[in-house]
Amino acid sequence: MYIIVGGGGDIGYYVTKSLFAQGHEVLLLEKDATRSHLLQEELGQSVFRGDACEARTMDEVGASRAEVVIAVTGEDEDNLVICQVAKKRYKVGRTIARLNNPKHEEIFHRLGIDSTVSPTKTILSLIEAELPNSRFVPLMTLKSAGLEIIEVHLPAEAPVVGKTLGSINLPRSCNLALIIREKQFLTPSAETVLLPHDYVFALINREGEDALRKIFGELE
Image (cartoon, rainbow, N blue to C red; front, top):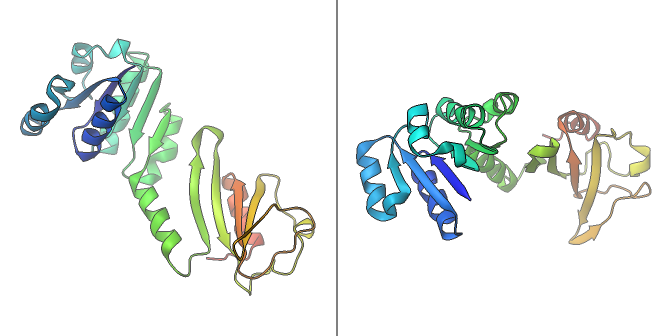
C-alpha cells in the first residue's frame, strides 16, 4: 500500500525503513532542508522535502491515493493538522498520529483521528510496572473498543483479600480475565477467593477502572 509519513525525526526514519522493508510504497516528508538531505542520502527517493501540514505538499506527493498517513513530528498540533488534512481533503482511509502529550488523546479521537500512539504513555507504563510499590499498572489500550488491560497487585491489607469474587460488587464494565498466584495461572470464577499478593488482570473501560480502584481500596 502507499503510505505517507510526516516528520523525519528518529521515529519517522525508523517507521519508514520498517514499512519499506515490508514491501510498502512509503514516502517520508521532512520540511527541514538539512535533515531532509541527510535522509535522502540513505533512503533516496523515499524522502521528499516538504511540510506535511500544507495541502500543496500533499498534492505534490499524491496524498489522494494514499491508504495510510502517519504523522510523527515532535509537535502534537502539527500531527493533528496532518491527519485532519489527510482525512478531510484527501479522504485517506486511515490516519495515525504520534502523541507527545497523552492528555491530547481524547481530543484527537474526537476530531476524527483513527489511531494515536503515545511514546510518553508507553514509557510511563513500563516504568510504573517496574517500580516495587506499583499496584495498579495499565498494560495495553484497545482503542477501537475503548478498553484497557490493567494489572492489579493485591497487598495483604487490600479490603478484597479473603473475599470471593462473587461477593464483590464488580461493575459490568470490568471483566477479570486472569489471576496469577505464585506462578500459577487461574481463571477467575465467582467462587475464586482473592489472596494476598495475587496479580489480577482486568479488561475495563474508564468507568470500570475508577470503580475497580475504589473496590480494591485505592491501591495506589
